[in-house]
Amino acid sequence: MTYQGNLLSKTLEIAIIIMLIGVSIYPSILADYNDIESDDHISDIIQQINETFYLRYLEDIVAFGPRVTGTTACYDAGEYIYNEFKSMGLKVRYHYWDSSGYSDRNIEATLSGTDATSDEIYIICAHFDSVSNSPGADDDGSGVAAVLLAANILRQYTFDHTIRFVTFSGEEQWMLGSYKYVREANKDGDNIIAVLNCDMIGFAITSTHSSNIKLYSNVESNWIIYFTENISQIYYDYIKLNVDFNDPKPNGDHYYFWEYGYDGVLYQEYEFNEYYHTSQDTIENMNITYATKCSKLIVATLAILAQFDSNPPTAPTIDGPTSGNAGTTYTFTFNSVDPDGDDIANYTINWGDGPYEVLEGPFISGSSVTANHTWTSQRTYKFMAMAKDKWGARSDWSYFEVTIPRTRAISNLWYQWFLERFPLLEKLLNLLK
Picture 1 (tube, rainbow, N blue to C red):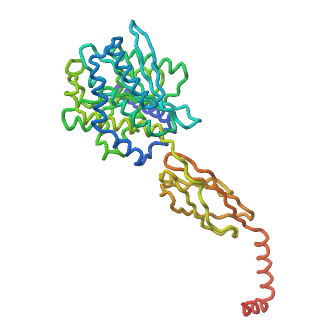
Picture 2 (picture 1 turned 180 degrees about the vertical axis):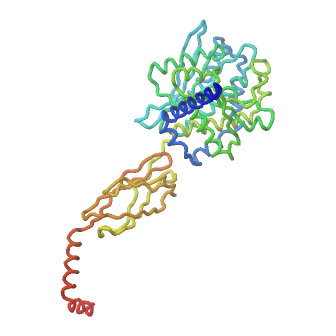
Picture 3 (picture 1 turned 45 degrees about the vertical axis):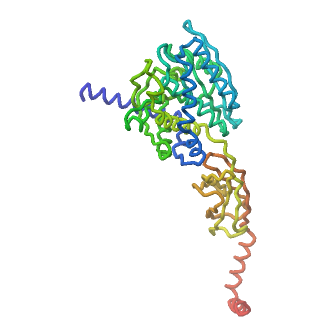
């Protein structure tokens, strides 16, 4: 093999190893989310996002003019964002920072998860500062509008895991605000699972541009891209946006999350804005329909990642025989009702004589599902069943007793032996019947 061939072989080997490492780190996440199905909750959220809603926040941000880190305009924009979050009933804080001769503040709003056993955090973020000669409509008023819109909609719902809505200053000075934020989060031991960075999502000229969005990721974070692509396909009729994969892009507030070992992706317009960092980065040079579509995809992805706090299904009712014979197969019926109207994802059954059996759905809430089982030993079995909905919420266990009596089996054997010994008696009994 030539030197080039050896090099290619080694490169492929390393790529495969990296891919396997990435999958091994996140098997539970991928297992939970690879089989996402369309859900009315997400459809409702997507349909609440419209151009009027989006444009309201974008116009407010751009009205502050150039928002250079450390200036009054940037300070006032941060105060506006803080007050908007506060009016939504969210827990809000200023995160003050200083670095490299600059000082400013990030704004963080939190929607706490309801699962007391979870410390997972999911972040949607953008930067509200701009360069000195630009009103910063697309860079990055477009992302800030998406974050504010996401907060205003998702606050209406409850989620298992915590969501943080974060806007950074200091991005144009090489991500000073996000650097300080991530360093503090790492010091505090925050379990940040995914960061969705929205930076420039509003420029599109052609139909091709407006039908696609670019996502940038490092290897460890690729699962978020796969996940987003899955969402774009499932809800394509609502969003009409395709996902384009791209190599890591270091300039953006996701960068220091990568540096500290957190996973994150950058969502960015398909065609880079030709008015970037100029006085022409205005709302008039944006495509608001496209920015709204990008926001729909990002918010839907965030909502599913954080998982709705689903009410668990009812403990299944169980119907079937309460006694029987060893070696005979019996049929049992299971029925669970989900209070949210969600499908039952599966039923788990412990028959009392071996491994658990899982009846994979989905099953319509309130519909009956049957399963067969055969017991080979003679005793009383107390078996149990549990239902789980599509969000992973589990019901209580239901219990059911079936007796496979030893005494009845023995008496039947003696009865058969007796009739074989006295065939005339058997004929007499048959006549009496």
